[in-house]
Image (tube, rainbow, N blue to C red; front, side, top):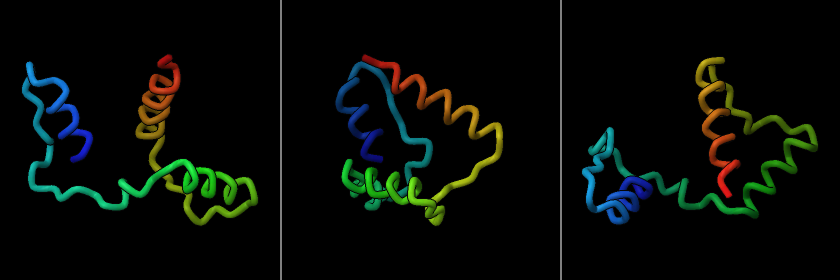
Length: 74
C-alpha cells in the first residue's frame, strides 16, 4: 500500500487504485533494508536455505523480467 500511496501522490494527473483496497499495509516490508538484505544473501552463500521462496516457472519468469528491468534503470 505504501507504494500505491506514493504513486498516487506523485502522479496526481492519473487515477491509481490498489487492486485490493481492503488490504492492510505490510509492516514487515517497511523493515527491509540493505543490512537485512546483505544478511540474507550471506546466509544463502553459507548454504542456509531456510528463507528461499519457490514459485512456479511462469511466475519466476515474470519476476526475473521485472527485476532485470529494474536493475537496468540508470
